Length: 343
Image (tube, rainbow, N blue to C red):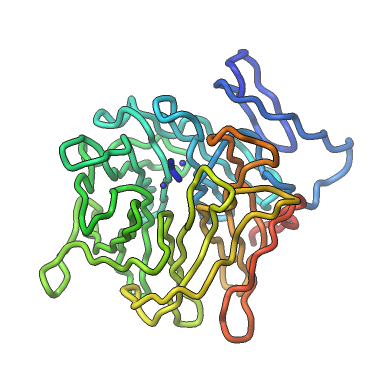
């Protein structure tokens, strides 16, 4: 859940496997073995970078892969976001504190589940904040803007973009989907409800649908949170997380439809724990190699034997389709994915 994007500050920086890592908080991560001098790392390994991170948003900007995760910590400490970039899926560079609650005056806690897009040479980061439980509390989904994918991101509106419950959906776990006609939609929701809303061109609000409604519910069976959407071969793939984010049954399922509004009938699970590898695999995103039928799933999971709900790490594994266009069950691995520079 973003609950939906280390160790105590020691005043030192550690460079590991191409990752600039600046320890800044109270969570410890074992150091991976350093590669031998003169050798090139050919697989990412999982997790792909050190630290406690969840709800990863994977995206490509230019010739780099980017991952924007939730900084996984108790809600009152979860007040910042880092980002990571890579030219090849293997060597990752950390970009620290691309946004925090000092830049979003109405956000006080539980900053999570970033969704990031580029439009007109600007970068927009949508996020959830404050974990509101009712319409009387301040918080919900916000949007920030920057001139660079590494930030710093500044609050665009000075208030939440979505600050109320609509159709029963808690305003968290936002995803921004660009349709084939260029229209942008916000797809979001916790508490087992999911809405879609048509964004204005400048992302400052929403446009009504033909029936006058702003929020359309598209909740499929077993939906809990963490929605994403993409198009392949003219079909709309809608994916979400099921189960409880703190438990081993956290998982990802999907549906396919002919439009972004569904109807979405659940096909089945495609990502879940492997008791030999890790537990609680869920809240994911998808990366497609530009111009190719080559797909990756970016997700978080919990290391074996870990009981702290916030100990989640970010991983990448390949995603494949069968001849009917159905997503094959994803094998979670310790090896990760092969090095793949962007052309």
